[in-house]
Length: 320
Ligand code: NAP
Image (cartoon, rainbow, N blue to C red; front, top):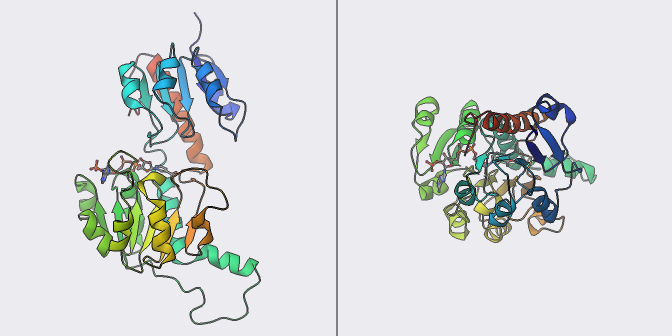
């Protein structure tokens, strides 16, 4: 009997697929850095039994309908806003994601971004590189304290809770907002449930960790930034489209808020002439929340484990 064919949309290290070769045939897009062109991906769907894809691929109705044998889409991300999950369900195609394995790594990056924005780390590095350092001065590159401040986490899920844990280590007060209360976070981390507007008004740091959905699209808009303190620092590690970037630019440029740390953007990749990059009070990263070697390997392995379980007739570990 033919082995099921797994199509992987990026070149990944051989060691990761090797343990699965006995059971599956693999085909991979040959580039490590460049996404597979859409027409090529659609063509591959004529034969693939399983698809391991990244958030750079849009798995929409057209693509799913071109798939003849496809049984599973294993997305190498916890967010799955790139996939038309309803059409997949209608076609009997299982969709899986990679929760948990990236939680702590993404929380580390969230906190790094928060600290970099608060303490002007990138500005400081550039200051030296541009040879501007002449004297020590009382308020040279003076930022905001982090310890004993209030952090407001919008989206207190797995990553939100891991960020709250880090915040507790800095003696911060933790506010959070979800559609439903997270009692574990309240009991274990003394997080305080707060409505969205109050959270915006009371927090020194506002951190977005909500998934991108119809409800969360542009939830941080002009009115939201107006409600924040003028010393507030906004951090987004969820998805770019939860923020109205024009409103954010305006809020930063007019000092309506103090600074921002962004790992994600409305349209990725951003180019060097993106307006937000003109501002000194913004730290931008190229969507690297889960990018540690250990975690990226674990995410790929989890995708392959999910595919393996499905073809063994078992429930995948992390269906969406
Ligand atoms: P999660 O455990 O599902 O947490 C998401 C939280 O958001 C939940 O607590 C949920 O609570 C809340 N939420 C959902 N819709 C909401 C709404 N309309 N209003 C308020 N709160 C809402 O997910 P996670 O594993 O922590 O991941 C969170 C997101 O981070 C992912 O979806 C992904 O987009 C992003 N992410 C980014 C990176 C990166 O590289 N930058 C890496 C990993 C993850 P309720 O259901 O009670 O509302």
